[in-house]
Length: 243
Image (cartoon, rainbow, N blue to C red; front, top):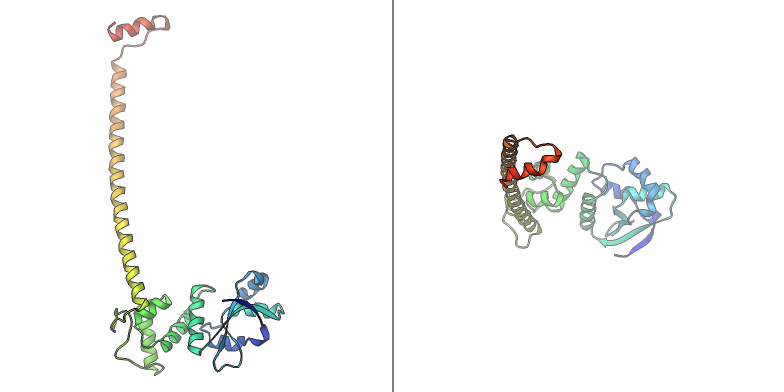
């Protein structure tokens, strides 16, 4: 999408942070961005249905840096959609880059994703968010206990925990691809280990051959008569060769 300059005053960073899984902004990151703001990629700004101001899905630290620099505008990519679409974008964007999640932020992220995609399997959500299936299962149980999400008897997704697989599920395809990659890597590793054993055997054989050659040369040197002085060397070679 096309990058444009958006008025900083039109963006509600407080509301954006309230909706974000982030607990707070990191001051060191903001200060670092203040020095390189023009070199950073544009932020993702959303015009969300029902919201009075624009919201930031990706780039809260950059927006805060722009405000501290007294900038009137900031480079941004504009989107429009529902609150669900905005939340999905905000969560996924921060998974791919930016400051690493804290434990609390990761929990917030999983909770928000479960509320959006309650009907997905734990494995599917785990693949989406790059966390373990057990972590998702624990958060699902906690949200169900607190009545924040509905407890479902059937969920859709990969068919790897408690629900039937849905045709065309990208999570399932990703899992199958990863499984194939693991099998290929394991086969390559087995071949490499076999080749390593063969090379070690060849090395040992060469060492034995080298030792035997050295011993043969040593015995040959002992069997040879001592070399005469320089004037008699030609006759010495003739006698040695039987000529």
